[in-house]
Length: 312
Image 1 (cartoon, rainbow, N blue to C red):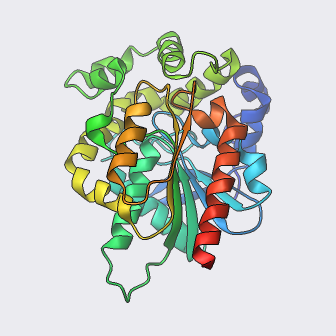
Image 2 (image 1 turned 135 degrees about the vertical axis):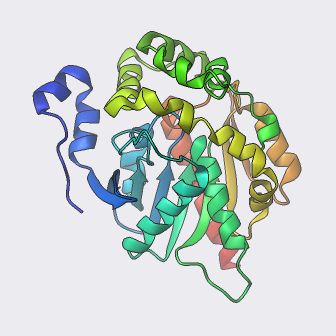
């Protein structure tokens, strides 16, 4: 794998923050289904895979990246159709395919066992990876093997998921038309609506996120990516069953999130055999951007408690 520079430095500086420019320049690309997938890899220690949400990208993790890379070998991908990865127009986007992408990448990296921290769309990808692992008999060991999962806000239970209006429109028969009329202004409005009242994104953060959505004609496929909501409903039983996988799991939830906040946390606590739930008051759909220090602290506590349980 080799790093690539897609845009001139002058163009990048004019359009996005220095941090996002550096994120891209320090990334690498690998091949999947004849397409290029962007990734960041940094740090030493146990492998930790970060799986981002819809409609953004691995840049979602940049606020907690330094703390995580100080303790783990951290891997973050832009899933196909997102961020700096290819966004083919004629492609069947699905959670199942994204899970295939991740499994193939981890094998190529020679990683036999890894941990997951995931958000939004990424929680469904992680649920599918857990479901595949559970489907093997007790003697078999999956390669690669998921060692633990920490979920951030996401639709773990589709019946508790409350999609925003723009998501419902994109998922409707008018989705291809709606996608053409999404502007940076409407994107900003929708993102601000799902952040906490006192943890709002800055104008620069919003512009960077919009840049990633719009990059490489990304708006043209948003209505195809959003099909994951229907996939969640179809795969509901399989993916909910995966929440009782025999590996350490936790749910770190910004309870002010109108999409997958307090109701989702309550449902998780009621439905999972041994629920580990961290509720963060006043925080919306993007805890890793809104309260990064609290997310890192909660994640470290989860890993420490998991290690103690496993030791006994």
